Amino acid sequence: MFSGKKLLLLIAFFCFFRSIYCQTDTVNFFAEDVSGKTEIFGFVRGGFYSGLDKDDDNKPYISSAFSDLALKINTENNLNFRAFADLRFRYGVEFQEPANSINIREGYARIYGKRWDLTAGQQIIKWGKADFTNPVSRLSPRNYIVRSPDREDMDMGNLLADIKVHPSDIFSIEAALIPFYSSSVLIIGPIPVPEYVTINGISSLITDKEMFSYGLKSDLHLRDLDAIVSWFDGYDPMPGAELTNFSIDMSGEIPAPLMELTFRPYKTRVLGFAIESSVSSFGIRGEAAWSDPSLSYLEYEYVPLPEIAWVAGGDYATGNWRFSVEYNGKSILDYIPAEVEPVIGAEPDFAAHIRLFADPGLDPAGYVRQQVSAFNRLYNYQLERYYHSAGMRIEADLLYGKLAPSINAMYNFTSRDFILLPEIKIKPSDRLSIVAGFEYYRGIDGSLYELVDDFMNSFYAAIRIDF
Image (cartoon, one colour):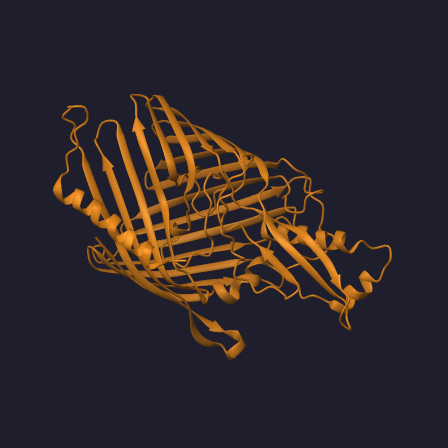
């Protein structure tokens, strides 16, 4: 929670660096005359999200409102070091719950050698070339329910050390070391769950010494082609749900199940490959990844099945318009059909459960564990053997950059989940922008988007002033 003491620290922090910025832009090291600079910039933003209350005749209501301050500091000497920090302060309400926080989105130091550079701190690293989905990238978590008109705000930093060696202009090798675990914020967070279900999320860093992860990547930069090969061995930012407690309450007239679900990280290996090229006004991208969890999904319900995912896409620019399309597919390895319905996502049939649990040969906890496994497969799109989806983006830059309409859409042909994101941005001046848009999620009964459309479908508007 945010407090007055933290606000005073934030003001002092800002004033200190602002005074440095105003006084000098030159840094000397060991009597060397090294030209450098320190910049302080950022933005202030205010906005809201509005939805329809299905429990009250679809009356509109404000589900989220926010006031954001982003303070960014960049300092470098143009020779052998750079430091960058992105401090975010938010005061407001998200999904009708208070959301007051200060966090360091990024904060890292980087030193350069002749053919290498080393970075340490909180950093966002995204590997891969795809636009809509990115199966190769596993280094940084994401916040899938962040209330922000800027889609990049979904990206979260991770504490890590990253070293890059580039022996030539066309080839480089990179290694990222992640000593602790930071979880993504799942899209199911605001789902209202039944009273008999308790969900324990991951709200902070897990500092267990066993949670070490690492990634390796090699880049090839040719005249008309960029290619990468990557390897990740560690804990996936997307955790799974584990059944950690189950009992049946016999005190009432009807026996009632009581269950506790806890999100648990799982270790996996991911081999990735990606390419990007361009021909005239056309851009071409491709990506593929094989992922293989260390534990078996047959024994641990929070662990997904191994899979191969692939992406093919491209973009075309003409005049003030840009068009992007992308196809995504995946094949679930070692596939077996789920034998039960997900524990969340299907309407519970208590009469059927009573008859089922009355069977002396049934293991109730084992049955519920299968339901939790089915829910994880629903969330990870692994209920079917194959999945196919496609995405499209159309955007324009009109009136000399003062008007920027766009529309994003993505449809999963297998699960039939659909998302539509139309938006319009107006820039009356260089540092002032006004944005309005709509997030529309739709899914069939029992699909992932059918679970979240009540709270994710919303109109939003925001005003942002940069400084």
